[in-house]
Image (cartoon, rainbow, N blue to C red; front, side, top):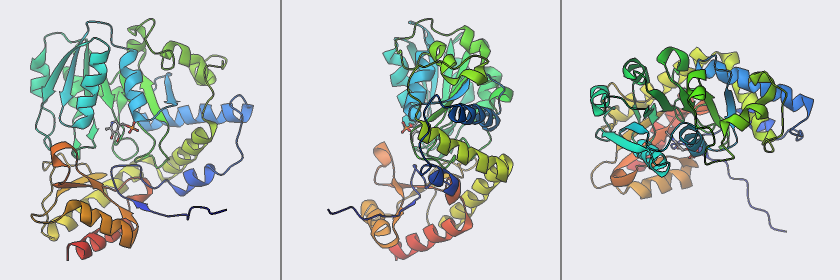
Length: 364
Ligand code: PLP
């Protein structure tokens, strides 16, 4: 029988990144049943550790069985009533996706566009509608490498619910759900949490939960039913809703334990240091960064492809010669921007040196 070779890549694109060693090893542990008391303990601890990385005391905090887009669907489907006014701050692909998801739920979507590469405009969001039901935004816009100010949205949200995407932020940037006034938030495991793709950390405030849709059009993502799924941490007996992806939850548990042992602040500082070193190195090579100064994410750097350089050929060269993956740009920037992620274990001086060295060689 011919088996495929084990190829080990350095994953420095927009995600997934390489998982933390602890998360990788956890995937090889004997599988637990989803109602096994040992698994329930791990699930409870995972929810507790997620509260720490979210910066929240929300009892309804859990790893949804879905990728980040499933987290987005769950956030909107549980909170958008037909005809609700949903103001979405858009400065990239994932803000656009929010508009699409909200419009499928028959919301009155009010997009507030800012140019790609620039942060969202808080004043424009405030002016967009006198009394929105929901204000939504992406914290770390992976398509452009821009950080948006979620705390500032919390200050202007008024009576609206604040619904935010932290897929690329969580574990690599400060996220303070309670202090910032965020009501519903979702993330993904495959970026700065350093786990494989497959789970969507999720949290919802009691205020938002009380205003939720009674019978959402999605059974799978109905938060009213999912309360029983996480059981203990929501103060109730665990009941069957769907089969928990036990291997993935055990892996997330291992990564969170590792991050909190390092300390969340230290992990965030490590991402900041790696991103700053990479960005300085790229500028020193004569390259131009894409995201606006002052709004650059450390964990996801966007850089313009120099004139006359074949973007795809360089990425192929890095893959073939260094087993190093970096990402292409998105939309109209597909071949004029590269996206370089330093997430999870890859937020390190060694990875910065590898990326700068390999890219320098490829560009000659
Ligand atoms: N939101 C943001 C900011 C993302 O970066 C991504 C994925 O890269 C998503 C949502 C969608 O997540 P997924 O691809 O895991 O479904």
